[in-house]
Image (cartoon, rainbow, N blue to C red; front, side, top):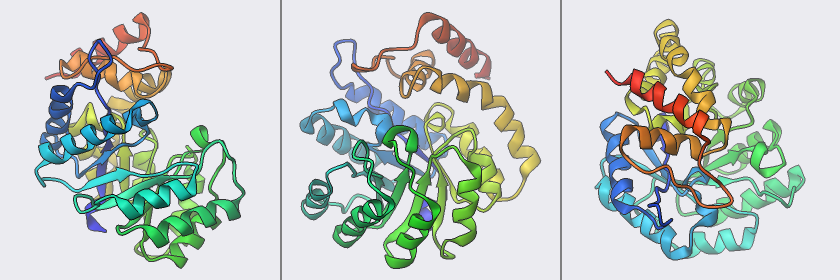
Amino acid sequence: MQSLIGTGVALVTPFKKDFSVDIEALQRIVNFSIDGGVEYLVVMGTTAENATLTQDEKELVINTVIEVNKGRLPLVLGVGGNNTMQVVDELKTRDFSPFEAILSVSPYYNKPTQEGIYQHFKAIAEASPVPVILYNVPGRTSSNMLPSTVIRLANDFKNVVAIKEAAGDVVQAFKIIKDAPKDFLVISGDDMIALPIVLAGGAGVISVIGQGFPKEFSEMIRLGLNKKAADAFKTQYFLSDCIDMIFEQGNPAGIKQVFQALGIADNTVRLPLVPVDESLAERLNEFVKNSIK
């Protein structure tokens, strides 16, 4: 799937000070990412704070992104959860015509075995009308989808086309790249190690920082895909402090502070998340100020 090679961004849901969804800010964020040169947009990922959105708000965000995008970039929709039957039901009832693929997180909280993870994604693959991107993020799910499970799914289901690998373990990513079917895409889910994964044969990244620095980050990934490592690492080292900072007090509080510094959106998040503290806000503001040319 060529449309999933390069930089995808996991869009935030901007809020006003009264915690309502800020549609105008969302429109600005979508256009900022597109104008910055990213390859695709991911809607309703974890970064969107979808766990604290009502169903009506989710539909509002999804429809807004579709409308603003106007078919310019491929769209990926987050459809996952720890209730397999509920996920399957959404796959059977939603209109997926605007979307290139779904991004589906490994079940959280339940802590299934590897066989349970396999059976969960088997049910999703059999129900999904569009290609499936697996999402492994042990830091949020409390269970690690092992390379053997990923490769088993990739071999058994042609519509399981990729994994967003966010275990923070480059060796694990390398194992999947090495052993997965030829056309299966390994997409980094960690901004800091996206470039090494790309240089090892990965397909790109689904990024958080990429929506705050779309031009720089997407160009870095393109340089990596073209094996221009020295040039790519210049950007890696330029952005590395900011990447650390945006995750220092949780996601998406950090990237929302970047958007506030850019004048694109407010830094409001919904409980149980809180905005970054004053010290981190000052450091992020200073980084953004010094990065604007």
